Length: 75
Length: 75
Image 1 (spheres, chains in turn green, orange):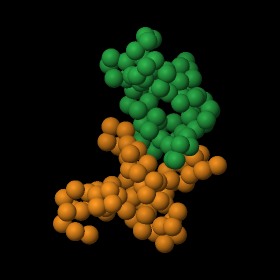
Image 2: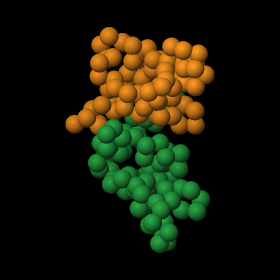
Image 3: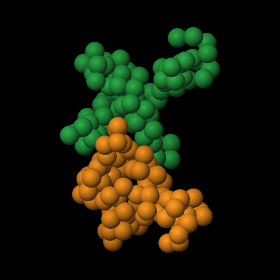
């Protein structure tokens, strides 16, 4: 990661860097079991999910949300 | 609803009109049991949820997604 990543939250490919991710979501993306299926499209979608600032708070909550959405959207 | 609504998908308050909503979501918003709790903020959030064009297809699927997100985000 570069200084520019930290400042902008996106790298030069336009993908989100660790710095811009909510707590827990970066951990989920880094998990060996899920890293190969959580695509940039999934990260974009998950990052957008919030209601008046409220969003999942932990890796486990992000996982619950991801698994539920995956069942709904990838069928 | 006006012709302009149909053309643009938003009314003059910037809120989404029926015309711009995916199938099933407008039905959920119109349901007597849920209409008072599904706020414009909820509609904005639900409308954004899609993965490569895939999204809930029916009122029942939107309800399932809404209830799950509500449990996660409104606690």
